[in-house]
Image (cartoon, rainbow, N blue to C red; front, top):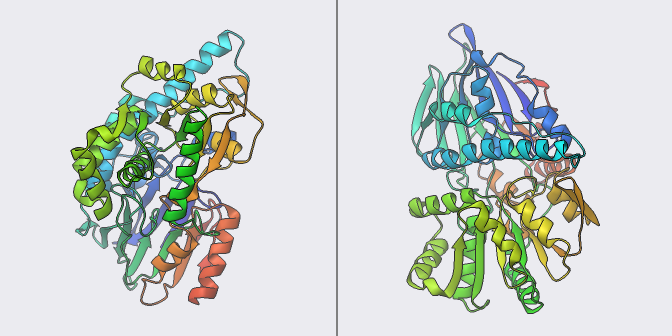
Length: 471
C-alpha cells in the first residue's frame, strides 16, 4: 500500500490523502477527503494544482466530514473527470447540500466584486479565482452514497469501510478501513478526520477504536491545551457584558456548520442559567441558518445537555431575541446597529462571506468586540486579527483595527493535545505506523513527540506534502 499526502501536511487545510493498493493483480486508487486549501495566495495556487494521477483512475472517495477544508475541492475533482462514488455519513451529505452550493456562490460573488472594483481602479492585489460552478456542484452531489455510523460496506473486493462518530461536527466520522491486498495480511487503516473535544458543547465524545495497523491522526491543537468550558464561559460572559455596557456590538466570525450552532447553544444555555441577561442575536449566514435547521433534524445525534438546552429554548422562545437573516438587504441593515447586538456570521476564518462586511463596519469602532472562537490558518484575515494587525485590507481598502480582539479557544471543535492523546489511548496495541497530519509544523512536531514519549509508540511520522510512503 502506498499513501501520498496531497494536503494537510505541515499545515491545517487542504486535507487530501491519496491511497494506492494492489487488488486482484491491478492497482486501485482512492482518496480520503478532498479539501480546499485556505489562507492567502499560496493556498489559491495549491487549489489550482493538478492531481498527480488522472481523476478517471480514482475508484472512490471517502469523506470524513463536511467542512470545506476536507470537502471543498470535490466539485473540481468531479469536473476534471472523477466519476466514482463518494462515501460519507448521512448527516454529512445533508450538510454538503448546503455547504458546496454556498462555496460556489461565494467564489463567483468574490470574483464579480473584484472585477467591478478593478474596472473602477479600486482593486489592488491578486484577483480571486472561481474553482467551480453551481452546475458542477450539482453534478458532484449526484455521486454521493451516504453510509450510517456503524454499518460496514464493501467498497471493492478486499476493501471495507465503517464510519465511527468523531464528535467534531454533525456527521463527522472516523473512517475505519480494512484492506486485504494481494498476498499480504489484512491491514486496518484508521483515518481520524477531525477529532472532537470530549465534553464539548453540542457533539458527543469521539468513538474509540480498539485496533489498527495504520493511523492517520490530526494535530490541529497538538501543541496546546484548551481552556476548560467553565473558563471559556467566564471569558465569554465578561466580553459580552463589558461590550454591551459600553454600547458596542459583539461580532463573532464562525463556521456556518458546527461552530455557529455551538455558540448559539452556549449563549442560550448561559441565559437559561441566569449568567447572561436577555440577548439580541443575529445569525447572518444563509448557510448557518440552513445548518441550524438541519441540526434540529438530527436532534438525536446531539449530546444530552444540548438536547436539554434546545428543549428549554423551545418552551421559552422569548428568553433570547434570536433572528436569522434571510437576504443581503437585511444583512446590510445590520450596519445601522451601533450597539447591543451579537452578530454571528461566516466564514470562520474571515476570508469570505458576510462576516467581511461586518468586520469592515465594526473594526474601526473601539467600543466593539471581535470574538475569535476557532483556529485561524496562516495567511487568513482571522489570523491577522489574532496577530494584532493595526489595520487590514478589506475590499481593496485599508480598515483600521480599533475594536478589541478576543481569542476564546475553549470552544474549539478540535480536541487539544490531551484529548488527542486520550483518543489514541483507545487503541489496545500500538499501530505499526502513525502519520501526524492536519497541523502546522510546530503543532505536528510537538504532538508527534508526545505520542513517542507518552504512549511509547515508535513509528510516528510527520509526512511531507506530495511524498509517497509505502506501508
